[in-house]
Structures are given as C-alpha cells and as structure tokens.
Amino acid sequence: MTSWLVFPSSPTGNNRRIELAGLDLSIIPRIDNIFVYPAELDIDRFKDALSHALSLWSLVAGRFLVLNDGHYFIEMSDNGIPVAYTENTELEKWPLNNNVVVDIIQTSLIPFIDGVQTMKLMQSSNEEPLLHLKLTCIVQSGEWVLGTSWAHVLGDAESNLNFLITLSRLYQQLEPMKPLPIFERRLWREEEADQSLVPFLKELSNAKPFKEMIQLFLTREETHEQLNLHFSSKQLSRLRELAGGNSVTIQDALTSYIVLRLNTHCFINDNERLILRTNTAINFRGVSDSIAPVGLVSNAVIFVASENFDDPLSFSSIAKTIRRSIIRTRDPKFLESCVATADGLLRKIVRQNSMPNLGPFPNDITVNSNFRFDWALLVDFGYTDKCRFYTPWTGRLYFRVFHLNPMKDGSEWLPRDRNGAEIAFRIAPDIKDKFISAWQKDVAENFSNIKL
Image 1 (cartoon, rainbow, N blue to C red):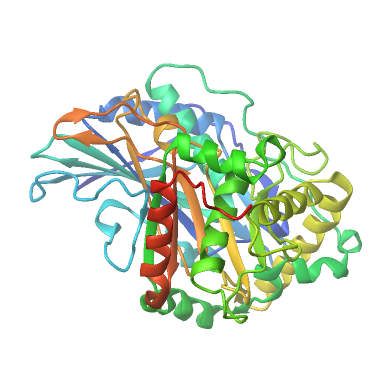
Image 2 (cartoon, rainbow, N blue to C red):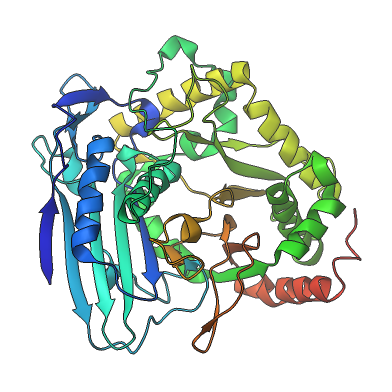
C-alpha cells in the first residue's frame, strides 16, 4: 500500500478557530462510505483536485481542539489529508450486489476504508486528520473503489456529501457548486432552550453511558435480520398518490407504507410493538439564515418525535401525521427552541461521557433518510450512472433511505431509475416472512388493496 499526505493548494485556514456548537459534538461517530467506479481514477488528478478542494474547504484540513473550559474548536490549520492506494489482486470483481446499505453482520467494508481514528480526538494533543481517503484498484476487473471516512465533528452527511461533490467536480475540471461552504455557526445559549421539548428529542434524552452504547451498537443487531427493499419511481409515485398526493412527500408515503404493513401484518394484536409514532431526522438548513443557512458545514440535523398517529392502521393518517410533525419542526420559532434544547442536551451528554441512544424506542420507528441526495450520481467523477454507492449499518426499525444504485446485466449497464429508492432496516426473524409476503402481494396488485 502507498500513501500520501495531500495539503491545500493554497493555505486559506490561517489557523483560524471555529467554535463548535453542542450539536457538533458527535465526537466518536464517523461517516464511512464506499464508491465503486467501473474504471480508473487518475491518482495525480485526484490528488490535485483534493488539494484544491481543501483550499475551499479549509475546515476539513483542520484539527479538533478541546479546551479546558469546555469549549470545542476546529482549528483550520491547513494540514494534510491522508490518501492511501492499494491494489487488490484476489477479487475477480467488486463482490457486493446493488444494495446500498450494507449488512455489517454479513459483510465488512474495513478492507476498503482507512477509518478516522476518532477515539484520538479526545486526547489533549491530537494530530488526527478529520478525513481519510483510500483508493483500491481491483486488478482483475479494472474497477476502482473510493473509501471515505469523515469525522462527524466536521458536519453531517450533507456536509460530507457537499465536500465530495466539490472533489468530484474539480476532478472533472468543473466549477464547484454554489453556495460555497460556510463554517461559522450559531452558538446556542442555555436560556434559549425549552425543557418541555425534551420528550420529543428521544435520542438525546435517552442517552446512555459511552461503554454501554458501544456494546449495544456492536451486539444488539445480531438478533435481527436486515431487509433492503427496492421501490421503482413508478411505485413511489403510486404510494404518494394514495397517501395524499401533493399534501405529502414521497418520503412520507414510503415511511407510512412500511409502518402500515408492519402494523397490519406483524403487530396487529401486539400493543407493545404496534408503531404509533415516528422519530425523524430533520435537516434544518435553509429554514432561517439565523439558525442555519444553506451551505453551512455543521451538524444541522435533529431527530424529532411525531405525535401519535390518529389511526395507526390508516395509510393516509400515518402520512399526514408525519408531514404535520415535520412542518411543525421547521417552523422558525419552534425550530429555534428545539435546536437550542437539543444543543444543550448534547453538551450534557459529552460532559457525562455518554452517547445518544439510536433506539429503538417503544412503539416508535426511526427515519434517517438520504433520499433528497443521489450520492452515486453526485460523486461519480464523470462515470455518469456507472458509479455505485455503499454505506454500512442500519438498526432495528431504523429506516435508512437512499436512491437506487445503477445496475448491470452482465457487462452492460441498464438504464437507471434515478428516482427509485432503497429502504433498509432490521426486523425480528419471527415477522420477516409475514412482512415480505405482504409487500410482494402489494407490489403485484399495484398497492390497490391498501387501507387508506
């Protein structure tokens, strides 16, 4: 294996310190992803594009600092980012199918990722880069694999994606997309919080000690099996039409359909498992520039619980409750209080050496959707509709949603359904077959027998 440190083409950080909000203090988690390309990425061109991207994104070339008074910073110190390259001569071709969300119980992506050592970030003196990149050439097939590892303190999935979009576009000698990144963020005050909102912030209000959460994360999914369900764009349009048309989104309809079929076919006589609420990741960029402007590089997502469904066995009732909850959360006045409350909770979690709780919570499902972003298309390095995207992990009744990967028939690439979706989650083995049978029947009937 060969490795390099790639520095910004021109130093723009100048050691300026960006103080982090409480919501940015996801210190241990990181975002690991894989992109698979059908042919070569030019390494020199890649490193040059990365160098220019780091000049625009000086936060990424910085280092995480913890000061004794409980303040946390990223110092934009214009450091290098490690890029590793290796050749794999054992594999005939990329070994995974087209499922975006990889089952970590069955498959390890570790050989293709050089992970950020986030445990080092809490040390008083740390030089750990906040982004690691790894290129792997599968020699027999000629495919190239890009593994990315992004420290969550840099920002959420949208921040990560926007940096990778910049890298991909600069590699293709295209202009970076607007808006350019914004690093300064609002620092929330304790008096802006509203403690009556704490019950709606379940991941934070149910935090557990660090060691306990790590152990749970490593072991609790082994008793449940992962489902990766694929829906075509036509099927999604049909579900939206049935759920309420333009009054709901495709994501609302997809979530509601899965909840409905779990309730009607798996939990119908089980009050302890019947799903009554959603716990949804809500991106709040662009609601108000005073809260989080578009282009902000930060963690601008909160998980907020919905009200109880008016009728947990009605498709349209579930969808409308979800939409109502999201609209409420994105109201600027409510959102300010909600974000300030979440910010304070996360600061407390860090002080207590705890971690947010990913659930599941009684009678809830969690929705963490990336359907608004087509990762495979946006980070294709010029291989349009031939780049495949993979990401590890989902949990029990933890819905992760992405665009479908491109597909091949032998050596031929098929026309891509750019608006189709994959939804992945883990489910108890005793209900798996019931659920799959209900879904397959609905697909065969074009969802005509759903109780609206």
